[in-house]
Structures are given as C-alpha cells and as structure tokens.
Length: 231
Image 1 (spheres, rainbow, N blue to C red):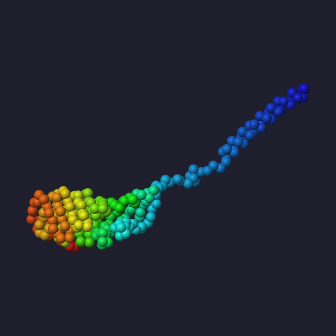
Image 2: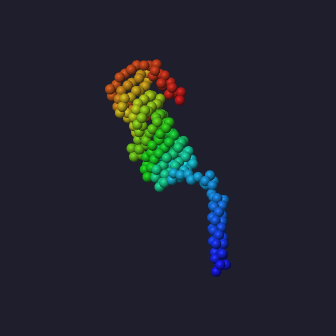
Image 3: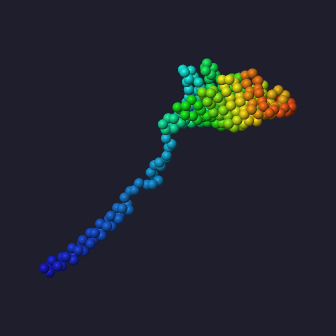
C-alpha cells in the first residue's frame, strides 16, 4: 500500500507534464502552420453581365431590304441580349424604301434595343444628307416608322442655299423636309431671317417661316456662306 501511495503523486505529475507538453506543442503548431496569405489571394473583380464585341456591323432589314446599318468601334450587349450600347460610331447609313442611301451619320455613342428598329446617337453628332445638307448637334434619335431624325437640343443645318440655326428640329428624311417649331435664325443669300415655326425643303430650298423679322446683314450672311463652301 505504501508503495502504491508513493506512485500516485508521480503518475499525477507525469500526467500534468504530458498535458502541458501537448498544450505547448499545439500552440507551436498553431503559430507555425502555413496560412494562406491575404495578399496572395486573387482579387475578385465584379464584371457587369454582358458581352463586348470589337468592330461589329449592325444591320436592320425592312421587308427584305436594308433599312440602316452601323459600323461601330466597340459594341456592348447587356445580359439578355436586348439593350445595346456602342462606343465610336464610325459610320451609320440610313436607306430609303427603294434601297437608296438617304443620310450618313457619325457620333461618339449609339444606343438602342435589339427588339426595336429605332436608335439614339449622342456626342459630336454629324449628319450628311445625300441632298448635300449637313446637320451638327449633340443628340439625335432615329424613328424608323416615320423616317424621322429628331434633334432636341441646339442644332445647325447647312446646305448650299442656307444655314439654319435653332434649338429643336425634326428632319423627315424621306420627304427632305425640316421642321423647327421654335425660334430660327436662317442665313439665306445676303439676308439674315429670324422667325419661328420653320418648314424648309432641303431639296428645293423652299421654306415657310412665321413671325418674320428681315434683318439685312449682308456681310455676316456672306461670311457664314463662305464658311459653308470651304467645308
């Protein structure tokens, strides 16, 4: 009994040493075990859903004929393939119902919907009609059904016969007809004409203008027309 009693404290001491040793070993393992570095973890970037296509050509057909086409620098198609946005409209051509080209336009951006026939362009918009009219503005929309170019902001129209400056303009391309409901300044010949509610035929040069004030600034009109002929 005495020998057994002497062994029990030794067993308790050895057990305590083993427990402490395991604890220390566990701490060392926990401190030295290789952990994945936060810096080496690949960064997760959130990409907008959609597809980007380089230098595509968009075409829209009407009853088997080409209605319009656009040469783009870059095209982004949103998820679902409905909304489209393009950067760098190098050239878009709108055709008449007989297949003849009507206007050519360039802009910074074109947006539209794949289920629709219409589109909008913005940024440095320039339209060249095959009737030799030039339209410059910052935003423009095309309505395929009405064959209508609409410019809601400040706009300038030039051809060999006149220069028109206004804000808010509708150009019915198939009819060669420009309508401006607001105030218009028109340089024609040696005269400057100011009025409102303009209707102007791009092909013939005929126009109708209401609330007219005839202002004879021949030199100013000549300078404007000179700028046009130099372009």
